[in-house]
Length: 620
Ligand code: F6R
Image 1: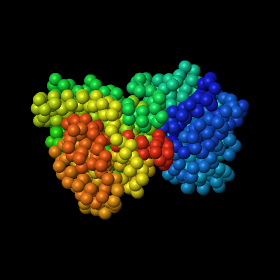
Image 2: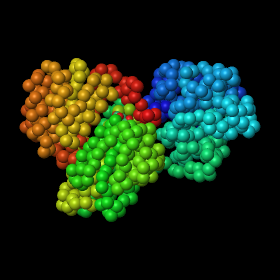
Image 3: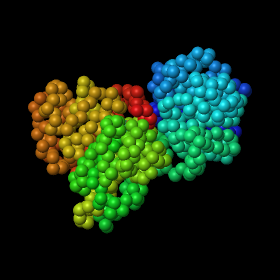
C-alpha cells in the first residue's frame, strides 16, 4: 500500500525520490507525488497513475537537495491529483506525506476549518499539515487544553499534533524554515531510517534504501525522529527513553530486478527452485531425519510440550497455513488449525498458553496479521513469525521465528513466497514430528524428499505441459472451478485466488467432496473444472468427483502425478513430478501459477499490479 521516501543530503533529490518511488511501486498504489525544498518554496508535483507519469512531470527540473515523496493507495477520498500526497498547510510552508488512517478526522477538520484552514483534498492526511501548522505558528490552545508555547519548534509541533490524533501513522514532515530537516514519526505504519555519509533517508520499506545504504534504523511505534545531513535524533512520543538502534541490513538473496522476464510474476515463478534451496539449505538434517529452525529457539523439551499449533495469515499466506496445518496434524499428531488473521483477531480467541502460534506473512506488514499477533501476545500466547521481509513489523513484534528467504517478491501476486511458506512449515513439521514420535527412518525419508523438491520444481518448469489449452477455456468461461481434497483442497484455493487476482476471471475453489452440496449447480456444459489430483491416499475419492463433473459436460483440466492413469479422465492433463503427499502443493501449485499468469496475459491485464490490490496491506 502507500509508500514513503524522503531524503536530505547533497544529491539532486528529485531523481533520487523518483527512483525510491519506483522501488516502492510493487506495494500497490494509484497516484504519486513529490515535494522538493527548492529556492525558498516547496515545489510539489502529483500525478494519478504511474510513477513514470510523475517522472515525466518532474523532467523540467526540480532543483533541490531535500524532499519527500509518496505513493498513495486510496482510502479516504477518491483517486485524484488533489488527494495524492504530499499535502501542504495554508501557506505552503509545511509539507506532509502520511501512511495510515486518522480516525478522528471529522472533529479535527471542523475545528481547523473554523480556525481558517483551507482544505484542498478529501484526505484524512491533510489534517496533519494543518494541525502541525497550527502548533508551529503558535496559535495557542487547541480546543480546551492549554499548551506551552512551542512556536517555531518543528519537533514539538509534530509531537503536539500527533498527541491530538487517533489512528495509525507513518509520517514525514518538512518545514520551509528548516529545509534540510525531515521529521518522521511512526505509529502502526512502518518507517525505516537510512543513514549515509552526510545524507539521511526515510522510507516505508528498506527496499527503497538499499541502492544507497544498508545502515538502517527501524522506527518503533510511538517514536519520532529528526533527520538532517548530520544524522538522526530520536525520541519517544510518550516521553520514554528507549529508542531504536542502528542495524546493518543483511544482503538479500535476489536483487528484486526483473531481468529478461517480461513480468516480475513470471520471473518469480521461475525463481522458485533457487528460493526453495535458500529456504531449505542448512535446515534439513538428513542423517538425523530432522530439521533445525534456529530462529525458533525451541528446545526438544519445549517442542514436546506443545499441545496445539495455530497458523495465521491472510490471502495466499492463509492458503499456505492450510497446507502447514494439514501436515502438522497428520505427521506430528498435534491438533493444528489455520486461521484467517482478520477474523481471528476480532473474535476474542481462546489462546492456549501451551499452544504455539505462527504468523505467516510475506511482507511482514499485513495489518490484520500484525493485529492477530498482538492479540495473542496480550492473551499470553507464544507467537513466532514465518516472514519473508527481514526486520518487518511482524518479524520484530514476534521476536522469534523463521525467515522464508524467498528473496524480494515484487509482483503483487505471491508465488515464490507461498512456496517458501509451505517449505518452512514443512521444516517445522519435520522438527516437531521427529521430536514427538516420528522414527529416524521415516524422518530421513521426509528429509530426503524435501531436499529433492527444488530439483523437481526445476524439472517441471522446464516442461510445464499443455497450460495454453487450459488458458483458452478459462478465458472464455464465466467461471472457473478448482477442486481438490485433503492437502490439495488448499492448493485449489490458492489456484482460484491467483487466477482471480491476475486475470479477473471469476473463480471458485471447493474441497472436491463439497461440490455436490451446492456449487455443482453452477456447472454448465463446457465449464472448466481444474482438479488437483496428485497420487495420494485421497486420489480415488477425488476421481469420483471428477466423474460427477464430467457427467454434466464440464471440461476437466487435471493436475496429476506424472504417469498416473487417472489422467485418462481429463480433457487436458498436466503432469507434475511425484513426491510425498505433504510436499505435493509445492509441485501442483506451479501449473496454477502459470495458468493465472498466462490467462492474465491473454486478457491484457496489468499482471504485476492488478487493479485495486496492494502488495503490503497495511490497513485492516
Ligand atoms: C495473493 C497475495 C495476497 C497476500 C496477502 C497477505 O497473491 O499476495 O493475498 O498473500 O495480502 O500478505 P502477506 O503475506 O504479506 O501478509
